[in-house]
Image (cartoon, rainbow, N blue to C red; front, side, top):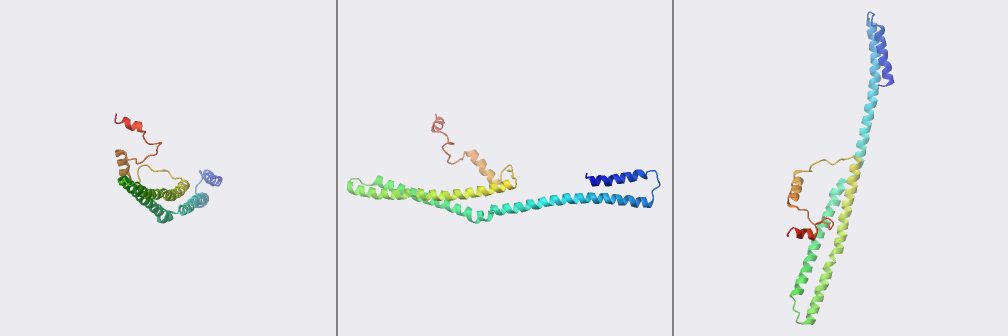
Length: 212
């Protein structure tokens, strides 16, 4: 309770004590009402100040959130960056498949070639080797495409991290939806971990031990 409120309430108490043994008149009631009204006026003024401060803080929080949502650039991520990363991944798969097919075809052709004519066989192998080298150049373009995808992921990570820090977000327990839950349970049940890094994958000795 503020000092101003205490003073007003003390005035009410003092007034009541003073007239405790006297006959109460209409004037006394009006005077008491005036003192009480002054007390409540101070109280409501203090309450209005507190409410205004809280509303001001809420307004500032909303303004900050709007700025952070704008900085997240969700529309740009959804309409441009993520689709572009998806296209790059599709092209990586396509170029890798084409290069693999070319390499396998050249290898099969060399293995099946007639080596009885040494000069013709050498010319044939030379032609196929040139095709092999050209096909292997896909890794350079693939590396550039992967770099674009990684850059996009890093941008998304930076924006989401900044937004999460701004709103002091905490991860909710459970799954985002039922489909995610089913995928996770299926992966655990079938040990579908996909290709692993060498540091995480089981050693060959451990794999051999399973069959002994």
